[in-house]
Length: 90
Image 1 (cartoon, rainbow, N blue to C red):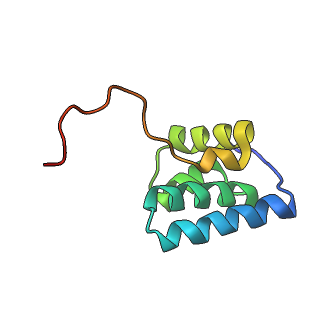
Image 2: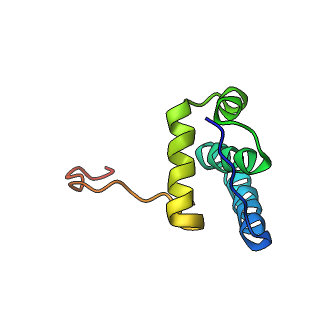
Image 3: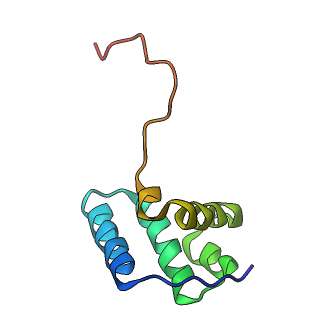
């Protein structure tokens, strides 16, 4: 699958800032996600991005679809919903 998207300078700069922050806090999951998006913007195919980052094709497609739908907000990870733990740390 080969798709083409364009970003405004502001969006690209925001992605790069998010990438730098992800590197500072050592969030590998977010680093891979942002790199995948940047590679797609540069014109790489989904298959090429998968080979470069060792990700599944569906994962890269999901990253792209979510980014198109939600923009920069798609890069924020939230706690999964569910029942809170009944055990304490101690």
